[in-house]
Image 1 (tube, one colour):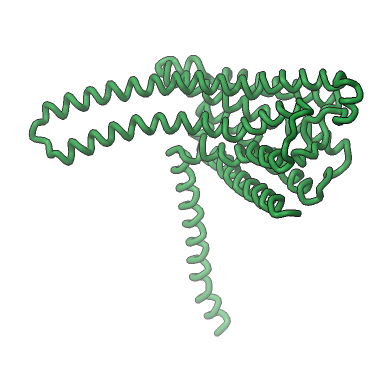
Image 2 (tube, rainbow, N blue to C red):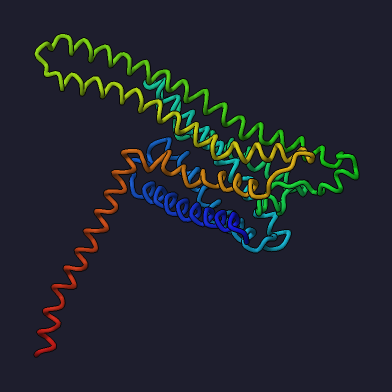
Length: 345
């Protein structure tokens, strides 16, 4: 293995470790806090977390094995099953992010009617669509033998049944159905999710800026009336207004930016790959796959762990564990003198 391959392997190991720990922590918070379970967004977060966990324990280690072994890990049937799972989980996770954006759009734009518009029954209906969408594309690809080991990405994923030589010999006709399926698949998964993210979150940003502007007007009117206010207090109020506006923009940019940075290189590479005349660097294929995998490690922080409710839950869990460990230690400490007395007697 050359230096680039070693670095890529190290990157995959880091992604696996971070993704596993962070998603497990989100799952623990969901199970520990009943308030999170009662909220409708928790249903979408749970679905996204489970998809990321399954992708972490099933596909990422096999990609690492493919990199180290320079070949397909396992037999063809096993690789097809893993490829089906990879297609299903990646599609489901993208659509889950779109569902979360729709939920937040309804909560911000229609705050008074949110509980009537987004109930657990409605969330189950949306998740039903994400599952049906993911299963349908994964099943079609598997039944048509378009799932197998792809050397460019060192993983079991979507791949044309015929290689480049067969395609050139037949004039590219045998690749036409696969090309149509690939374009259709990415258009109705990645592109659809991206459009939903942009439309909903930009609407959320517009409403948030409107509310911030109204709060700023009220704050400025108050500051004008308070003529005796200290200049430092006035400056802190103005700085808080600026931070509030920047906070809303930063959150929206994080949601859309991480989606594009992680998924867009891989999807674009898959589209470029459909043109045999365009060469693709093997190292770039692996890097684009790692970027797609890194979304599973980013999602727990973007959607859950950086929120106040999850941070408080994590703090409560840690404090409870520390209290229990200290109680056990003190209990053993009280037992030791008795044991020594009995031994002396």
